[in-house]
Amino acid sequence: MSIYLDNAATTKLDKRVLAKMMPYLEDSYANASSIHFLGQENYTVLEDARAKIAKVLSADIRGLYFSSGATESNNFAIKGVMAANSDKGNKIIVSAIEHSAVIETAKELKQDGYEVEIVSVDSNGQVNLKELEAKIDDKTVMISIMAVNNEIGSIQPVEKIAKLARAKNVLFHCDATQAVPYLDINIAKWDIDLVSLSAHKFYGPKGVGLAYVRPGIKIRPLLSGGEQESHKRAGTYNLPGIVGMAYALELVYKERDKHIKKVSQLQQTLYNKIMKEIPDVYLNGSFKNRVPANLNLRFHGIEGEAILMDLSMKGVCVSTGSACSAQNLSTSHVLHAIGLKDWDLNSNIRFSLGKYNTLAEINKTVTALKETVKRLRKFSSVINN
Image (cartoon, one colour):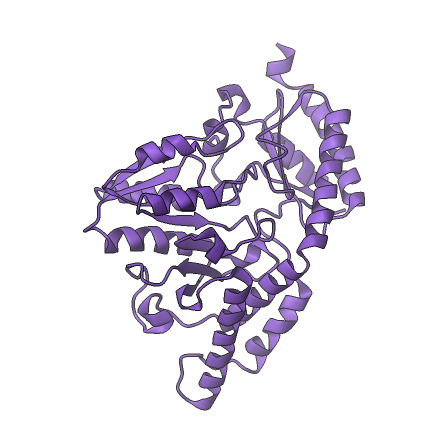
């Protein structure tokens, strides 16, 4: 038995997407930057993919840049904007629950002399908008707040943040990696300046992502050495990945209603069964204001890593938090930010659901989890002392 409930870390590549990619891995392999006819044929394919993405996201096509993934896109947006707009100021504001690709980038900027402000969140993982507004001053260049948190699935009021940013004349970057397809990402409607995405979060290939930068914004390239992407991102185009990302994005929004309905039902079933059949389990964040793919629970008296490893031995794959920090067993900054006490910070499991999961898998997972929790609590010093 193998059950994969770690879709927030990465999703399975849709076979239909792979089929779209294969011609550019096998036969149409020419470099899209080459000026001969094979290269130019592939450049046409590249621009067609860009146009498809722009249509799905309601984005100005001139602002779409291909990257290796959201981590690069986040670094490009934050470092690039701050470096290119030093005449405006040197301050950036980020939320306390941002992905490490944003948090660590902000820390690097602070080491280089930039001013970094952290805005708090409430117990549900919602950004404090009044505090955010109070922190914006005439030195503030940009704010960076994610659309959906990768650990607890909390949804931020992106349009309200964008409206505030526009009123205060600061730029707004949004890491929307976990938002596809759960939020209707409409860049024009959101009136947003910068957006980051990763294809492998929505059944596309790994190693390819997207950075949207509203035309007219000054930004310094992160990678130099070539003329690709209007001199904004050097490097040979990952054409198979770009084709795959465009098609995956089209598919996931075309099938959005069906996808959300299924995942919501699985989440509700998983939550109800766990809460009914396992004692002393608590939800992290709001059940209402979160994407249906996410369920983050804490199990009193047990280390989350112990639960993860025991479930893994039973063939069930889950997570304790962000995949990018899986090798680092330090406590989660997200759970700390929403107010969990020290003794609860290491007792958490993130179940993240996807379109390939089934009700049978949910039932088997709960059965395995019951056995795991019962066994581990026998050895718990918290419970037995």
